[in-house]
Image 1 (cartoon, rainbow, N blue to C red):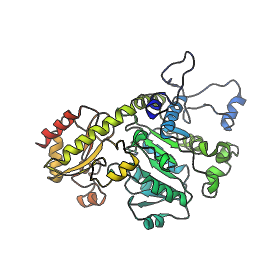
Image 2: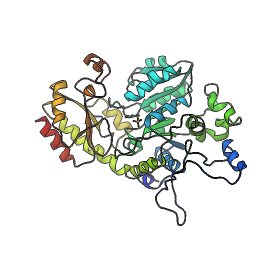
Image 3: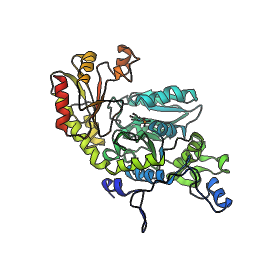
Image 4: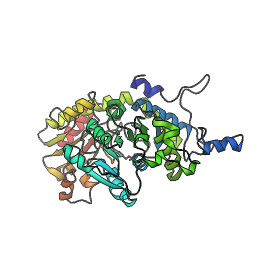
Length: 422
Ligand SMILES: Cc1ncc(COP(=O)(O)O)c(C=O)c1O
């Protein structure tokens, strides 16, 4: 199937007389005829459902659709993108381990890694995604367990060189994890470029309607855990909490990562997506292949308009010829990048504040990547505790405006910006 068809049909095939839409299995628990039947589930001897804290059929149908779209072998939904990124790393790294991560990742992920996961004893080295090969090489340690980056960084809009980072990770016997939230599998499939695990904040384009918070993890099924058994004991040695099964042996390269993540992390942390939200997410994904090109088309026109305006100091959008990441974007996502643009006004911080007060179509919101055009001035909201010097050091200058272009008529979006600039 092509991606447009997968968006509608993958993950669920109704049988004779069954509902065409995926059913919402709104149930905490599942009934069995005998204790032996249920026992087999607890031993991971049979697949099935017993408690929605770990797994739910509605979620699994949507996760299977996402796995198909990303070209992976298995997937799972989580309660948020934060949970997805946490699980993707914590499933293979523990106290005393180390991760190499691109420095230009979403601030929430940066904080999760740099503050919370450090408290759990996991070390992180953050590298500039455009660093030299020598600098990248130097970041690895004997206890490095994974490399992490975002296809298109939020909000820096840096396009990640997936192939290069995949090669470096594999040379050190570790997987590459890529957060593909901004590009979506419509514009880029990181697994095809060498990524091993893909994560999503499904809250963004996948849901697409500003309706549900959620996340997803997809395994590409290509990483050979057994070939690097000493690095990944959690996957390659027996799990006593499931009567001594070894995930990589029992579930193979295609299934080990997601099975372990479900059986251990979802069991213990319980960050499941509600089945009702999974249903709404599925509705969003059904129109993903139609919405994403429209977001990109609108953003391209808005970026071109902004870069020609005499009150605008600078525009960052990887779809603009001349942008630092234009060439790389052409390689990894030739059909479009995303709907998010960063720009600054000549009047700096105060001009940004005055401009945003006048907008009528673009709504001020701490969100990106949904159908409604929305806008944020980080220096005045998400980053307001930082001084101007700290903002500049963090790559989010005091004048930076983040605009997420929606799928309204682009003429209305541009007219709104025009009147506010005037
Ligand atoms: C690229 C990226 N990854 C992860 C997240 C976290 O996702 P969530 O807000 O769904 O927890 C976000 C949120 O903005 C994001 O932009």
